[in-house]
Length: 429
Image (cartoon, rainbow, N blue to C red; front, top):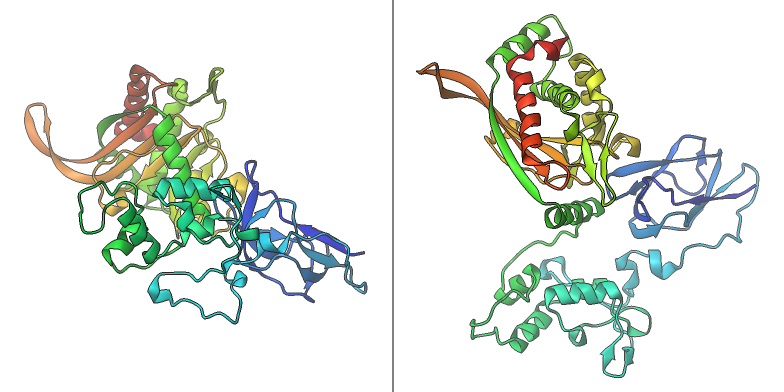
């Protein structure tokens, strides 16, 4: 019996996703648990596995389609020996078709070098003097200072949609600049112009790469975090010569090496056990104190970053942490993490030391209340008992949500972390 394949719900907050690629084609036999497609969520690209065995029938949603709602029919699966099911409602074609598919083949396409996109103009719908536009198109137009009357609408009955505003070309930008008195005069603020409109106006050359779902999510979450979380920052220098010596001895007879970042993860976790008041989240109703210590570690991936979670890090040896992190990082960089492996976490670490960054301050990853920014381990001149000596020093900065953790408590946690690194024997037990 034929059945529908639905857009899966891959994370608790997922409402839509991008179907990036089909791994099977119509007529291919699939077995239960076999990957059949790739879906880009707001966090990662995830493989969709078949839940039943059969033959892939009609593909209802082509690859490259964005904003596909969860539980929408994306394809059909036919039992071996049966015929295609024909009565399943598919997503409306106008919703899922790629942008390029909306351009008639008889019209010439704009050159990629021109930096513009050809759009099909439909009769414009107005309500009195008001242009009919989607709420998202209105918001984008407002942010960029674009007059909707200058935008060609390609939606139903000429409705202006987001892609129309995104595609405003140089001619419209020049008209906009002239409207606000910018052309030739150069006397008024350019704050009403977006970067792309300003570049078009100035005749600057550029390449335009549309933002991925992951990039948009990073931008939205970081903006919300910076706007809504009252950050404060505290910094300590940690002398780690004893730690590095112990690490060297510990790894001398091991095939699997332990990195400094693995030790930092364990130190963070044990310090949270000593100062549990830092292992919390803010809610309007009260402080949420976590029973588990789950450390999220920022990992760079193509097009953005992701935070694999080291679950119950305080209960694991540094060797266990090293092994699990190698696996998590490797799979994160090829988009093979499962949502449970990157959703959640009670505390975050961002380490840029491998790039030679001495010190930086990271943005809190909500709903967590802390993120530790780790700089490079480098030799510096320090004063020890009145004498100047050379020591290996690592600067660490803790970003803290002041709603949940006051300054004294944040300092207490960072001091506990520093003590762990400078008296490191417990880290290798």
